Image 1: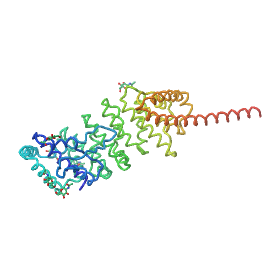
Image 2: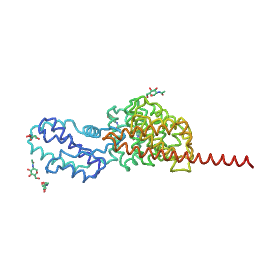
Image 3: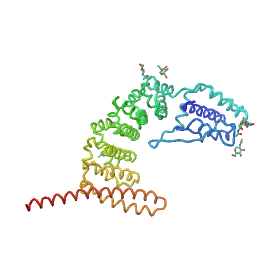
Length: 412
Ligand SMILES: *[C@@H]1O[C@H](CO)[C@@H](O)[C@H](O)[C@H]1NC(C)=O
Ligand SMILES: *[C@@H]1O[C@H](CO)[C@@H](O)[C@H](O)[C@H]1NC(C)=O
Ligand SMILES: *[C@@H]1O[C@H](CO)[C@@H](O)[C@H](O)[C@H]1NC(C)=O
Ligand SMILES: *[C@@H]1O[C@H](CO)[C@@H](O)[C@H](O)[C@H]1NC(C)=O
Ligand SMILES: *[C@@H]1O[C@H](CO)[C@@H](O)[C@H](O)[C@H]1NC(C)=O
Ligand SMILES: *[C@@H]1O[C@H](CO)[C@@H](O)[C@H](O)[C@H]1NC(C)=O
Protein backbone atom coordinates (compact mmCIF):
# COMPACT_ATOMS: atom_id res chain seq x y z
CA UNK A 1 0.00 0.00 0.00
CA UNK A 2 1.19 3.47 -0.79
CA UNK A 3 2.03 5.80 2.00
CA UNK A 4 -0.60 8.26 0.89
CA UNK A 5 -3.14 5.48 0.78
CA UNK A 6 -2.34 4.94 4.38
CA UNK A 7 -2.96 8.58 5.02
CA UNK A 8 -6.32 8.01 3.43
CA UNK A 9 -6.93 5.13 5.78
CA UNK A 10 -6.06 7.23 8.77
CA UNK A 11 -8.17 10.06 7.38
CA UNK A 12 -11.15 7.79 6.98
CA UNK A 13 -10.74 6.45 10.47
CA UNK A 14 -10.71 10.06 11.49
CA UNK A 15 -13.97 10.75 9.69
CA UNK A 16 -15.53 7.83 11.45
CA UNK A 17 -14.36 9.22 14.73
CA UNK A 18 -15.66 12.62 13.78
CA UNK A 19 -19.00 11.02 12.99
CA UNK A 20 -18.96 9.45 16.41
CA UNK A 21 -18.08 12.74 18.01
CA UNK A 22 -20.98 14.34 16.20
CA UNK A 23 -23.25 11.65 17.57
CA UNK A 24 -22.17 12.69 21.04
CA UNK A 25 -21.74 9.12 22.16
CA UNK A 26 -18.84 6.93 23.05
CA UNK A 27 -16.75 9.81 24.11
CA UNK A 28 -14.12 7.50 25.51
CA UNK A 29 -13.85 5.73 22.21
CA UNK A 30 -13.32 8.94 20.34
CA UNK A 31 -11.00 10.67 22.72
CA UNK A 32 -8.35 8.97 20.65
CA UNK A 33 -9.00 11.47 17.88
CA UNK A 34 -7.31 14.11 19.91
CA UNK A 35 -4.13 12.10 19.57
CA UNK A 36 -4.63 11.09 15.99
CA UNK A 37 -1.67 11.30 13.95
CA UNK A 38 -0.15 11.98 10.79
CA UNK A 39 3.04 10.35 9.86
CA UNK A 40 5.14 11.74 7.09
CA UNK A 41 8.07 9.42 7.05
CA UNK A 42 6.90 6.16 8.53
CA UNK A 43 6.53 2.80 6.91
CA UNK A 44 3.10 1.39 6.59
CA UNK A 45 3.85 -1.48 8.92
CA UNK A 46 5.29 0.90 11.45
CA UNK A 47 2.26 3.11 11.36
CA UNK A 48 -0.18 0.21 11.38
CA UNK A 49 1.47 -1.36 14.36
CA UNK A 50 1.29 1.92 16.15
CA UNK A 51 -2.26 2.43 15.00
CA UNK A 52 -3.26 -0.59 17.07
CA UNK A 53 -3.42 0.36 20.68
CA UNK A 54 -1.50 -2.14 22.72
CA UNK A 55 -4.27 -3.08 25.05
CA UNK A 56 -7.20 -3.07 22.67
CA UNK A 57 -7.35 -5.36 19.73
CA UNK A 58 -10.30 -3.86 18.02
CA UNK A 59 -10.29 -0.15 17.79
CA UNK A 60 -9.59 1.34 14.42
CA UNK A 61 -10.25 4.89 15.41
CA UNK A 62 -7.13 5.47 17.39
CA UNK A 63 -3.73 6.04 16.03
CA UNK A 64 -0.49 7.36 17.29
CA UNK A 65 0.64 10.82 16.47
CA UNK A 66 4.06 11.44 15.17
CA UNK A 67 4.30 14.72 13.43
CA UNK A 68 7.58 15.55 11.80
CA UNK A 69 6.67 19.15 11.61
CA UNK A 70 9.07 21.11 9.52
CA UNK A 71 11.17 23.67 11.27
CA UNK A 72 10.13 26.24 8.77
CA UNK A 73 6.50 26.58 9.48
CA UNK A 74 3.30 25.94 11.23
CA UNK A 75 1.28 23.92 8.79
CA UNK A 76 -1.29 21.96 10.70
CA UNK A 77 -1.10 18.67 8.89
CA UNK A 78 -3.92 17.17 10.87
CA UNK A 79 -6.15 19.99 9.84
CA UNK A 80 -4.99 19.74 6.26
CA UNK A 81 -5.68 16.05 6.25
CA UNK A 82 -9.11 16.55 7.76
CA UNK A 83 -9.99 19.05 5.08
CA UNK A 84 -8.78 16.70 2.45
CA UNK A 85 -10.65 13.76 3.90
CA UNK A 86 -13.86 15.67 4.37
CA UNK A 87 -13.51 17.42 1.03
CA UNK A 88 -13.35 14.06 -0.68
CA UNK A 89 -16.17 12.42 1.23
CA UNK A 90 -19.87 12.40 0.61
CA UNK A 91 -21.52 14.68 3.19
CA UNK A 92 -24.79 12.71 3.17
CA UNK A 93 -22.97 9.51 3.93
CA UNK A 94 -21.02 11.24 6.64
CA UNK A 95 -24.24 12.46 8.20
CA UNK A 96 -25.84 9.03 7.91
CA UNK A 97 -22.77 7.60 9.54
CA UNK A 98 -23.16 9.99 12.43
CA UNK A 99 -26.83 9.10 12.79
CA UNK A 100 -26.10 5.42 12.58
CA UNK A 101 -23.35 5.74 15.11
CA UNK A 102 -25.83 7.16 17.54
CA UNK A 103 -27.90 3.99 17.47
CA UNK A 104 -25.02 1.56 17.71
CA UNK A 105 -23.74 0.01 20.88
CA UNK A 106 -20.08 0.18 21.70
CA UNK A 107 -19.28 -3.28 20.41
CA UNK A 108 -21.41 -2.81 17.29
CA UNK A 109 -19.59 0.37 16.53
CA UNK A 110 -16.25 -1.29 17.05
CA UNK A 111 -17.31 -4.06 14.71
CA UNK A 112 -18.27 -1.51 12.10
CA UNK A 113 -14.98 0.26 12.48
CA UNK A 114 -13.20 -3.03 11.87
CA UNK A 115 -15.32 -3.75 8.83
CA UNK A 116 -14.70 -0.29 7.48
CA UNK A 117 -11.01 -0.67 8.01
CA UNK A 118 -10.98 -3.93 6.09
CA UNK A 119 -13.05 -2.38 3.35
CA UNK A 120 -10.67 0.53 3.01
CA UNK A 121 -7.75 -1.83 2.85
CA UNK A 122 -9.40 -3.68 -0.02
CA UNK A 123 -10.32 -0.52 -1.88
CA UNK A 124 -8.01 0.80 -4.50
CA UNK A 125 -6.30 3.80 -3.05
CA UNK A 126 -5.27 6.70 -5.20
CA UNK A 127 -1.52 6.79 -5.83
CA UNK A 128 0.54 9.82 -4.90
CA UNK A 129 0.71 10.74 -8.57
CA UNK A 130 -3.08 10.61 -8.79
CA UNK A 131 -3.42 12.77 -5.71
CA UNK A 132 -0.97 15.26 -7.18
CA UNK A 133 -2.90 15.20 -10.44
CA UNK A 134 -6.11 16.05 -8.54
CA UNK A 135 -4.43 18.93 -6.73
CA UNK A 136 -2.91 20.27 -9.95
CA UNK A 137 -6.28 20.05 -11.71
CA UNK A 138 -7.87 22.04 -8.92
CA UNK A 139 -5.21 24.72 -9.25
CA UNK A 140 -5.50 24.73 -13.03
CA UNK A 141 -9.25 25.34 -12.93
CA UNK A 142 -10.37 28.94 -12.99
CA UNK A 143 -13.66 27.90 -11.35
CA UNK A 144 -11.86 26.58 -8.25
CA UNK A 145 -12.70 28.51 -5.14
CA UNK A 146 -10.06 30.04 -2.90
CA UNK A 147 -10.65 27.21 -0.44
CA UNK A 148 -10.12 24.59 -3.17
CA UNK A 149 -6.85 26.25 -4.09
CA UNK A 150 -5.65 26.41 -0.52
CA UNK A 151 -6.50 22.77 0.00
CA UNK A 152 -4.80 21.76 -3.24
CA UNK A 153 -1.62 23.59 -2.22
CA UNK A 154 -1.69 22.09 1.25
CA UNK A 155 -1.99 18.65 -0.28
CA UNK A 156 0.96 19.34 -2.57
CA UNK A 157 2.95 20.54 0.41
CA UNK A 158 2.66 17.07 1.87
CA UNK A 159 2.87 15.17 -1.38
CA UNK A 160 6.11 16.75 -2.60
CA UNK A 161 8.01 15.75 0.48
CA UNK A 162 9.21 12.37 -0.84
CA UNK A 163 11.91 12.84 -3.45
CA UNK A 164 10.15 10.73 -6.09
CA UNK A 165 7.00 12.79 -5.85
CA UNK A 166 8.93 16.04 -6.07
CA UNK A 167 10.56 14.71 -9.22
CA UNK A 168 7.15 13.82 -10.67
CA UNK A 169 5.65 17.22 -10.03
CA UNK A 170 7.14 18.81 -13.13
CA UNK A 171 6.22 15.84 -15.30
CA UNK A 172 2.61 16.43 -14.30
CA UNK A 173 2.94 20.10 -15.25
CA UNK A 174 2.62 21.00 -11.58
CA UNK A 175 5.61 23.31 -11.17
CA UNK A 176 4.43 25.76 -13.82
CA UNK A 177 0.95 25.74 -12.31
CA UNK A 178 2.23 26.41 -8.80
CA UNK A 179 4.56 29.16 -10.09
CA UNK A 180 1.53 30.83 -11.69
CA UNK A 181 -0.09 30.91 -8.28
CA UNK A 182 2.77 33.12 -7.04
CA UNK A 183 0.87 35.91 -8.83
CA UNK A 184 -2.46 35.14 -7.20
CA UNK A 185 -4.14 38.20 -5.64
CA UNK A 186 -4.64 36.32 -2.38
CA UNK A 187 -1.52 36.53 -0.23
CA UNK A 188 -2.15 33.19 1.47
CA UNK A 189 -2.24 31.43 -1.90
CA UNK A 190 1.05 33.13 -2.77
CA UNK A 191 2.53 32.10 0.58
CA UNK A 192 1.50 28.45 0.14
CA UNK A 193 2.78 28.39 -3.44
CA UNK A 194 6.20 29.67 -2.38
CA UNK A 195 6.24 27.08 0.37
CA UNK A 196 5.43 24.22 -2.02
CA UNK A 197 8.19 25.34 -4.39
CA UNK A 198 10.71 25.59 -1.57
CA UNK A 199 9.79 22.18 -0.24
CA UNK A 200 9.85 20.53 -3.67
CA UNK A 201 13.37 21.74 -4.48
CA UNK A 202 14.96 21.38 -1.06
CA UNK A 203 18.07 19.23 -1.46
CA UNK A 204 16.90 18.32 -4.94
CA UNK A 205 19.14 19.64 -7.70
CA UNK A 206 16.84 18.42 -10.49
CA UNK A 207 13.82 20.29 -9.18
CA UNK A 208 15.97 23.35 -8.38
CA UNK A 209 16.98 23.42 -12.04
CA UNK A 210 13.40 23.05 -13.26
CA UNK A 211 12.13 25.88 -11.07
CA UNK A 212 15.05 28.13 -12.04
CA UNK A 213 14.38 27.46 -15.71
CA UNK A 214 10.76 28.43 -15.20
CA UNK A 215 12.02 31.80 -13.95
CA UNK A 216 10.51 31.71 -10.48
CA UNK A 217 13.55 32.91 -8.51
CA UNK A 218 13.22 36.55 -9.58
CA UNK A 219 9.58 36.56 -8.55
CA UNK A 220 10.37 34.94 -5.21
CA UNK A 221 13.10 37.49 -4.42
CA UNK A 222 10.56 40.27 -4.99
CA UNK A 223 8.08 38.45 -2.76
CA UNK A 224 10.55 38.55 0.13
CA UNK A 225 9.80 42.29 0.25
CA UNK A 226 6.09 41.62 0.76
CA UNK A 227 4.39 43.57 3.52
CA UNK A 228 2.85 40.28 4.62
CA UNK A 229 5.45 38.85 6.93
CA UNK A 230 4.27 35.26 6.51
CA UNK A 231 4.49 35.57 2.75
CA UNK A 232 7.96 37.13 3.02
CA UNK A 233 9.18 34.30 5.25
CA UNK A 234 8.00 31.56 2.92
CA UNK A 235 9.37 33.40 -0.10
CA UNK A 236 12.78 33.63 1.57
CA UNK A 237 12.54 29.97 2.48
CA UNK A 238 11.95 29.14 -1.19
CA UNK A 239 14.78 31.44 -2.33
CA UNK A 240 17.11 29.76 0.13
CA UNK A 241 16.12 26.26 -1.03
CA UNK A 242 16.60 27.27 -4.67
CA UNK A 243 20.10 28.69 -4.32
CA UNK A 244 21.52 26.30 -1.76
CA UNK A 245 24.50 24.50 -3.32
CA UNK A 246 23.32 25.71 -6.69
CA UNK A 247 25.66 27.91 -8.71
CA UNK A 248 23.11 28.78 -11.41
CA UNK A 249 20.66 29.81 -8.71
CA UNK A 250 23.25 31.92 -6.94
CA UNK A 251 24.19 33.69 -10.16
CA UNK A 252 20.57 34.71 -10.68
CA UNK A 253 20.31 35.62 -7.00
CA UNK A 254 23.25 38.05 -7.17
CA UNK A 255 22.15 39.42 -10.55
CA UNK A 256 18.76 40.20 -8.98
CA UNK A 257 20.46 41.99 -6.04
CA UNK A 258 19.50 39.24 -3.64
CA UNK A 259 22.50 40.19 -1.49
CA UNK A 260 21.18 43.75 -1.11
CA UNK A 261 17.82 42.29 -0.13
CA UNK A 262 19.53 40.21 2.57
CA UNK A 263 21.49 43.20 3.82
CA UNK A 264 18.32 45.25 4.15
CA UNK A 265 16.67 42.53 6.19
CA UNK A 266 19.71 42.12 8.43
CA UNK A 267 20.35 45.80 9.06
CA UNK A 268 16.78 46.70 10.00
CA UNK A 269 16.03 45.50 13.50
CA UNK A 270 12.31 46.22 13.01
CA UNK A 271 12.10 43.23 10.72
CA UNK A 272 10.54 40.03 11.95
CA UNK A 273 13.06 37.95 13.88
CA UNK A 274 12.26 34.80 11.86
CA UNK A 275 13.01 36.65 8.66
CA UNK A 276 16.32 37.91 10.06
CA UNK A 277 17.33 34.46 11.28
CA UNK A 278 16.59 32.99 7.88
CA UNK A 279 18.46 35.79 6.10
CA UNK A 280 21.62 35.32 8.13
CA UNK A 281 21.46 31.56 7.54
CA UNK A 282 21.34 32.25 3.82
CA UNK A 283 24.50 34.38 4.18
CA UNK A 284 26.18 31.53 6.05
CA UNK A 285 25.16 29.07 3.31
CA UNK A 286 26.38 31.31 0.53
CA UNK A 287 29.74 31.80 2.23
CA UNK A 288 30.02 28.09 2.89
CA UNK A 289 29.32 27.31 -0.74
CA UNK A 290 32.17 29.63 -1.75
CA UNK A 291 34.48 27.97 0.74
CA UNK A 292 33.69 24.58 -0.72
CA UNK A 293 34.01 25.75 -4.31
CA UNK A 294 37.14 27.86 -4.31
CA UNK A 295 37.31 27.85 -8.11
CA UNK A 296 34.24 30.05 -8.51
CA UNK A 297 34.53 33.81 -8.27
CA UNK A 298 33.64 35.17 -4.84
CA UNK A 299 30.63 37.40 -4.69
CA UNK A 300 31.28 41.16 -4.41
CA UNK A 301 28.97 41.37 -1.40
CA UNK A 302 31.68 39.70 0.68
CA UNK A 303 33.93 42.68 -0.01
CA UNK A 304 31.18 45.11 0.94
CA UNK A 305 31.96 46.59 4.36
CA UNK A 306 28.35 47.46 5.08
CA UNK A 307 27.22 43.97 4.21
CA UNK A 308 29.75 42.42 6.59
CA UNK A 309 28.90 44.95 9.25
CA UNK A 310 25.21 44.08 9.06
CA UNK A 311 26.13 40.48 9.89
CA UNK A 312 28.51 41.36 12.73
CA UNK A 313 25.92 43.72 14.23
CA UNK A 314 23.57 40.80 14.76
CA UNK A 315 25.82 39.54 17.55
CA UNK A 316 24.39 42.40 19.62
CA UNK A 317 20.87 41.04 19.23
CA UNK A 318 18.95 39.96 22.30
CA UNK A 319 17.87 36.85 20.40
CA UNK A 320 20.32 34.05 21.13
CA UNK A 321 19.31 32.05 18.09
CA UNK A 322 20.03 35.01 15.86
CA UNK A 323 23.38 35.49 17.61
CA UNK A 324 24.29 31.89 17.04
CA UNK A 325 23.38 32.01 13.35
CA UNK A 326 25.35 35.22 13.02
CA UNK A 327 28.41 33.54 14.56
CA UNK A 328 28.17 30.69 12.06
CA UNK A 329 27.95 33.20 9.21
CA UNK A 330 30.90 35.22 10.53
CA UNK A 331 32.94 32.05 10.91
CA UNK A 332 32.38 31.22 7.25
CA UNK A 333 32.90 34.78 6.07
CA UNK A 334 36.22 35.08 7.91
CA UNK A 335 37.55 32.08 6.02
CA UNK A 336 36.89 33.56 2.60
CA UNK A 337 39.85 34.93 0.69
CA UNK A 338 38.03 38.12 -0.30
CA UNK A 339 37.10 39.22 3.19
CA UNK A 340 39.72 41.36 4.92
CA UNK A 341 40.62 40.88 8.55
CA UNK A 342 41.16 44.61 8.99
CA UNK A 343 37.63 45.34 7.81
CA UNK A 344 36.26 43.06 10.50
CA UNK A 345 38.59 44.70 13.02
CA UNK A 346 38.35 48.39 12.17
CA UNK A 347 35.05 48.77 10.35
CA UNK A 348 32.91 46.12 12.04
CA UNK A 349 34.62 46.16 15.45
CA UNK A 350 34.43 42.39 15.61
CA UNK A 351 36.75 42.35 18.66
CA UNK A 352 34.33 44.51 20.59
CA UNK A 353 31.34 42.42 19.52
CA UNK A 354 33.02 39.17 20.51
CA UNK A 355 34.04 40.57 23.89
CA UNK A 356 30.52 41.86 24.58
CA UNK A 357 29.16 38.45 23.68
CA UNK A 358 31.66 36.72 25.95
CA UNK A 359 30.45 38.72 28.92
CA UNK A 360 26.82 38.13 28.05
CA UNK A 361 27.43 34.40 27.81
CA UNK A 362 29.22 34.40 31.17
CA UNK A 363 26.08 35.87 32.74
CA UNK A 364 23.96 33.34 30.94
CA UNK A 365 26.06 30.46 32.24
CA UNK A 366 25.04 31.44 35.75
CA UNK A 367 21.44 30.63 34.84
CA UNK A 368 20.81 26.96 35.49
CA UNK A 369 18.41 26.31 32.61
CA UNK A 370 20.45 28.07 29.96
CA UNK A 371 23.93 27.00 30.97
CA UNK A 372 24.36 24.22 28.38
CA UNK A 373 23.29 26.44 25.54
CA UNK A 374 25.53 29.24 26.75
CA UNK A 375 28.50 26.86 26.94
CA UNK A 376 27.90 25.67 23.36
CA UNK A 377 27.60 29.22 22.14
CA UNK A 378 30.78 30.20 23.95
CA UNK A 379 32.63 27.35 22.24
CA UNK A 380 31.48 28.65 18.88
CA UNK A 381 32.34 32.22 19.87
CA UNK A 382 35.89 31.19 20.79
CA UNK A 383 36.27 29.37 17.53
CA UNK A 384 35.28 32.52 15.66
CA UNK A 385 37.68 34.55 17.78
CA UNK A 386 40.52 32.17 16.99
CA UNK A 387 39.86 32.20 13.24
CA UNK A 388 39.66 35.97 13.37
CA UNK A 389 42.99 36.36 15.18
CA UNK A 390 44.68 33.91 12.84
CA UNK A 391 43.45 35.95 9.92
CA UNK A 392 44.64 39.14 11.60
CA UNK A 393 47.98 37.50 12.39
CA UNK A 394 48.57 36.76 8.73
CA UNK A 395 47.92 40.39 7.88
CA UNK A 396 50.33 41.57 10.57
CA UNK A 397 53.04 39.14 9.43
CA UNK A 398 52.68 40.34 5.88
CA UNK A 399 52.80 43.92 7.08
CA UNK A 400 56.04 43.39 8.98
CA UNK A 401 57.54 41.54 6.03
CA UNK A 402 56.68 44.45 3.80
CA UNK A 403 58.10 47.05 6.16
CA UNK A 404 61.25 44.93 6.60
CA UNK A 405 61.62 44.82 2.86
CA UNK A 406 61.18 48.56 2.60
CA UNK A 407 63.80 49.11 5.28
CA UNK A 408 66.11 46.88 3.31
CA UNK A 409 65.38 48.82 0.16
CA UNK A 410 66.20 52.10 1.84
CA UNK A 411 69.52 50.82 3.14
CA UNK A 412 70.62 49.46 -0.16
C1 LIG B 1 -15.13 6.77 30.18
O1 LIG B 1 -13.89 6.77 30.84
C2 LIG B 1 -14.00 7.06 32.21
C3 LIG B 1 -12.59 7.10 32.81
O2 LIG B 1 -11.64 7.27 31.80
C4 LIG B 1 -14.86 6.02 32.90
O3 LIG B 1 -15.02 6.35 34.27
C5 LIG B 1 -16.21 5.91 32.25
O4 LIG B 1 -16.96 4.88 32.79
C6 LIG B 1 -16.06 5.69 30.76
N1 LIG B 1 -17.34 5.72 30.09
C7 LIG B 1 -17.73 4.80 29.23
C8 LIG B 1 -19.06 5.02 28.62
O5 LIG B 1 -17.03 3.84 28.95
C1 LIG C 1 -6.38 -9.79 18.23
O1 LIG C 1 -7.44 -10.55 17.71
C2 LIG C 1 -7.04 -11.64 16.91
C3 LIG C 1 -8.25 -12.36 16.41
O2 LIG C 1 -9.36 -11.54 16.38
C4 LIG C 1 -6.14 -12.55 17.70
O3 LIG C 1 -5.67 -13.59 16.89
C5 LIG C 1 -5.00 -11.79 18.30
O4 LIG C 1 -4.25 -12.62 19.15
C6 LIG C 1 -5.50 -10.62 19.08
N1 LIG C 1 -4.39 -9.79 19.56
C7 LIG C 1 -4.34 -9.34 20.78
C8 LIG C 1 -3.15 -8.51 21.11
O5 LIG C 1 -5.22 -9.54 21.60
C1 LIG D 1 -12.40 -7.34 20.66
O1 LIG D 1 -11.96 -8.39 19.87
C2 LIG D 1 -11.92 -9.63 20.53
C3 LIG D 1 -11.33 -10.63 19.60
O2 LIG D 1 -10.33 -10.07 18.84
C4 LIG D 1 -13.33 -10.02 20.96
O3 LIG D 1 -13.30 -11.22 21.69
C5 LIG D 1 -13.91 -8.93 21.80
O4 LIG D 1 -15.25 -9.21 22.09
C6 LIG D 1 -13.82 -7.61 21.11
N1 LIG D 1 -14.23 -6.57 21.99
C7 LIG D 1 -15.23 -5.76 21.68
C8 LIG D 1 -15.55 -4.76 22.71
O5 LIG D 1 -15.79 -5.80 20.62
C1 LIG E 1 -13.52 23.07 -12.57
O1 LIG E 1 -14.15 23.25 -11.32
C2 LIG E 1 -15.55 23.27 -11.38
C3 LIG E 1 -16.06 23.65 -10.01
O2 LIG E 1 -15.38 22.97 -9.01
C4 LIG E 1 -16.02 21.89 -11.84
O3 LIG E 1 -17.42 21.87 -11.93
C5 LIG E 1 -15.40 21.57 -13.19
O4 LIG E 1 -15.73 20.26 -13.57
C6 LIG E 1 -13.91 21.72 -13.16
N1 LIG E 1 -13.36 21.61 -14.48
C7 LIG E 1 -12.48 20.69 -14.80
C8 LIG E 1 -11.98 20.73 -16.20
O5 LIG E 1 -12.05 19.89 -13.98
C1 LIG F 1 -4.51 23.27 -17.58
O1 LIG F 1 -5.73 23.39 -18.26
C2 LIG F 1 -5.64 23.58 -19.64
C3 LIG F 1 -7.02 23.69 -20.22
O2 LIG F 1 -7.78 24.57 -19.47
C4 LIG F 1 -4.89 22.41 -20.27
O3 LIG F 1 -4.70 22.67 -21.66
C5 LIG F 1 -3.54 22.23 -19.61
O4 LIG F 1 -2.93 21.08 -20.10
C6 LIG F 1 -3.73 22.10 -18.11
N1 LIG F 1 -2.43 22.03 -17.49
C7 LIG F 1 -2.10 21.07 -16.63
C8 LIG F 1 -0.73 21.09 -16.08
O5 LIG F 1 -2.87 20.19 -16.29
C1 LIG G 1 12.52 48.60 8.64
O1 LIG G 1 11.54 47.59 8.71
C2 LIG G 1 10.26 48.07 9.01
C3 LIG G 1 9.37 46.87 9.21
O2 LIG G 1 9.65 45.87 8.31
C4 LIG G 1 9.79 49.00 7.91
O3 LIG G 1 8.51 49.50 8.21
C5 LIG G 1 10.78 50.14 7.75
O4 LIG G 1 10.43 50.93 6.65
C6 LIG G 1 12.18 49.61 7.54
N1 LIG G 1 13.12 50.70 7.60
C7 LIG G 1 13.98 50.93 6.63
C8 LIG G 1 14.91 52.06 6.83
O5 LIG G 1 14.02 50.25 5.61
